[in-house]
Image (cartoon, rainbow, N blue to C red; front, side):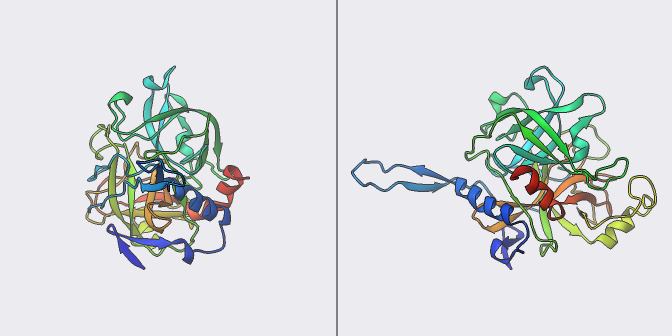
Length: 314
């Protein structure tokens, strides 16, 4: 186990045999961390250098978060609703780019009660104001297809995971690049990073126009079930926290994901491939953003790798 950037990182060499396609594609996408640069003098047989475009920086201890770096989370996607064009959209959910054409998000993000189906996806940026002011290199896509997990059945919050197919391939660069899928059922990390543009607190409707990041502790299922004990046997969590779910938060409060962060990633930094993230969770739901002993619940990515592979890389 290696401690890097304030997080325990995972090496692909220690991963299980399941999710073979996901592991293969992770290594392939890892090559896009580097950009080729020609030698300053073009001589016969001159070597082409590869330069790292890695933007990962140290994450300090959304609600209680801080601004993300321009190239820090190149897989982060903002999802938009309404508007005849993307510049008129309301950006209300998040997602993660997992291939040239697919975004992983929460099932409940496929439709807004007031604005209908998700219509737009935006990669490569860290600010939702006028794209011309974004310090990144935003790419905007229309949504070509929405694919919900077949076992998602609201109002129950289980299997809250979905895939969105973009209208064209994303162009990979320093600002837009897929993340890897975690394939390990048992996590050996204690903390992970959540990112999103959601509400800044439970008692405010103000959302962030900047992409925020926050470091959260993973919470054991027993402790998480205790936090949601009044929901157990109800419509939303009739069986309590399931094995397909996981929880993260801070017992003292002050740091959390919140409304508007739904569908976004819970992630760790991989030891290898270099400068790549592993998606371990998809933000699903919570109770009181940033309050003490009130963790948020995430769909556990490893549980869904076979389904994701069947859709993304059939």
